[in-house]
Image (cartoon, rainbow, N blue to C red):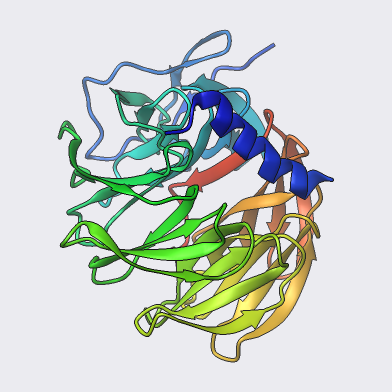
Amino acid sequence: MKTSGEASRTRRRSLGWLLGSALAFPDFPRGAAASAQAQPGTVSGGTLQTIEGRGSSPVFVLNSRDATVSLIDPRSMLVAGELPVGKEPHHLYPTPDGSQLIVGSAMSNELHVFDPLSARLLQRVRRIDDPYQIGYAPNRRWFAVAALRLDRVDLYGHSGLAGEPFQLLRRIALPRAPSHLWFTADSKTLLVTLQDSGELAAIDTERMETQWKIAVGALAAGVIVTADDRLALVGVMGEDHVAVVDWRQRQLVQRLTTGKGAHNFRGAGDRRHIYVSNRVENTVACVDTATWKVTGSIGIPGGPDCMEISSDLRTMWVTSRFARAVHVVDLPSAKILHRIPVGRSPHGIFTAQRAPLL
């Protein structure tokens, strides 16, 4: 087992290679499933204030080095508030019904559960080891945690319903450094990238054991499965390409050059195009999965990492990991409209008014 110091060194090593008056946030309209008994979260300088009829939800940005969440008002494109969370929040994921947003704090071993519409803290779940990357199975049977510093993936029973406890079902050893994960459409396979060994691993969720591993390239990072569930894409940061894998046949079928430091993915919401953040090249590329061609590239400074897309498919928010900023892009024109300062090392990003994941 890695110590916390060893884990921090592992993360710094990977990042090093790639680098060479606080305002109260307004309460947005609450969904029917939100807890009426929940206590409000806090922002620097005060508590959340209730303002009805605002008509939109905040954009959540995880500031990994500050242990905070910045809340961007999508109307003004300004940070309207900040919420404290546990140490090293890296990734987030909504519950299957969309009523809650789960933020994983890797170094403090806990989850913070928010109402994605109002930004109210609903629950704090402790003793969830190293939730670096998290996600739900489509069938709602499993909640998965990629514990990067502990070299394992943990499977929990949790359907995403309010108040349900997280029940640890199995700890699956997966050296070295499990980083990102994605469930296949039938929920029977969980794909996991292994950052330090440059592999893609597959977990059989029924047997709760590793089924296979294949080499994809140095510093394997993000992973996503195409809308037709046929192929998996892996960002290979150390070799400047995306590995395209036939996960059923367990074969690497193509290396697609998208830009230096290919890292993470976001489906465009049209079931055909997928965006790739190239953290070293400072671009976001668009891949057409019908032709397997890169159709365009958008310059995004500061190490673009995670991406979010509005429900109308016209706006993209991109966290710039090394610039303490979120860049807002107009997709039809491929131009940056706004640069929004946030906290240190912004990573995961989410809004409830989002396009489908693929």
